[in-house]
Image (cartoon, rainbow over the protein chains, first blue to last red):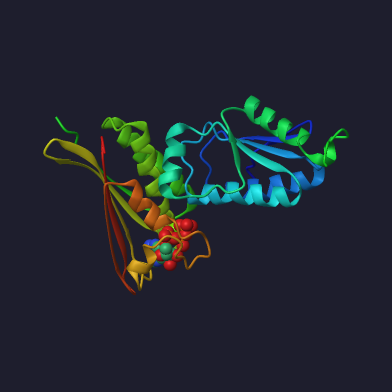
Length: 130
Length: 136
Ligand SMILES: Nc1ncnc2c1ncn2[C@@H]1O[C@H](COP(=O)(O)OP(=O)(O)OP(=O)(O)O)[C@@H](O)[C@H]1O
Ligand SMILES: [Mg+2]
């Protein structure tokens, strides 16, 4: 069966979507990613959609599901590289990508995750919580 | 001289959706439609074609280059012989769904194009016609 590869990079998982997905493939990716967050205990998921020329309500829902389920397992999701035309279209379509962070590219997405990790109170020994 | 393009595509399975979107994008690019309008058009296309697949077991898409005076654009007609939609006003509202998803497809598609018309007869089928101007 066809599958989208998921890469483990330290504490994070990276998925690069290279082609416009048909529905079954997108659903398989959702299942694989959630399973892998669970198996690896990853604290962040990066989804690179720079090659996608379309995000419709179906794909949007998949991304939302991944973010939602990952957050239950204490991992944050960042969507990186969304083309400007896709972003404009998503807003007009009315799709709320709730709970999903966005970044311009993988590098910045990674930095965003790192900064959010270090901002977690239980991760910092010198946290000053009065 | 305006191009005369007329094409028919069957939507019978998920992969047909991907093909249809790509083909519409190609034709849109060919008439010089900008990338933002292309993206809006194929997103609307995806929503309506997916509805046909999901609620009507498939259907047909007719793509045509249209000129009206100085305007040039693409017209798409989606036709199925599915169960039809009992209450179109309801179906056109954000959040209305019988498929337990977001209920965004039809109202969202309408926002993304210049003209949108839907006709449905219960027991006979549904026809959705959309038009996107090249520079609209
Ligand atoms: N071709 C069709 N044949 C029969 N019923 C349809 C058709 N297209 C849409 N509908 C009905 O209209 C409702 C609204 O459609 P719409 O695309 O707006 O939302 P949805 O498909 O339910 O959710 P989403 O598109 O956000 O996944 C559907 O739930 C369905 O009941
Ligand atoms: Mg729909």
